Length: 290
Image (cartoon, rainbow, N blue to C red; front, side):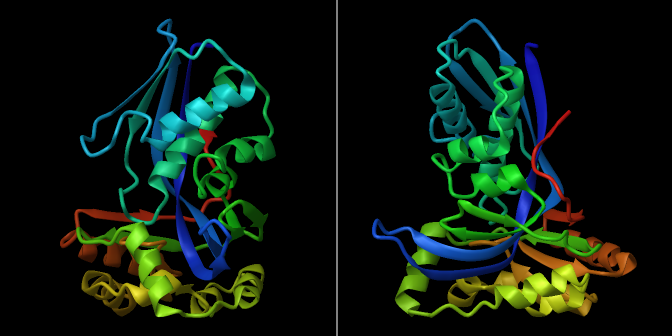
């Protein structure tokens, strides 16, 4: 086997709260995350160079050790003690950048999945997550996928029942805010934990999409209000969304629809204003080998 192709899904934060900080300054999180059928494609091929190389069609994507996929490959080889590291990684990006949808982490998770297959190392999902958390906080969830409660700095994953059948409309405005600034604003605001995870999990288990939407919350959106985010939320709710929220540190916004016709109508309306607009479904898996 000389080449493997993997599709790596994006994530949405159905809920995001911050419960404290570690001694070394990392924020402790309590979240409900959902994988969706919006994928980046990672193609990895062995070669004889003895080096990791990475390419991507987008100029804004770094193609060196700053890229999470590149870092994930280095971490994989080191963990497995593999000396022959000649691989070419090709990223075909669809997940929006700087959107709060874990596009970079999805690429890292897809890279680990692909290398595990390519080198026939037989690493389990927990082992891959162990490698992933050394690269980025979102990698364990991106490897696991589905619907899950995520805690700690992102490394504690508790899968829960699949989210009720629905459609997600996702739109990303051009404006945004950096993750670092978002967390800094939260620290200055001194807001305590507000999220009732138990109520959301119960609604999901009861197949109650509207009930789950009633519990949606994002602490970072609360301290970093963006006019474009609010405008998108208003359009989504006016189109019939059961709930609409910014995901992660943004600036992508998603709306939850239980009526597919209303979801299609909302996606068409938003796509007239926003270049990056998608109609998605919840999925129950992480990266998939093609």
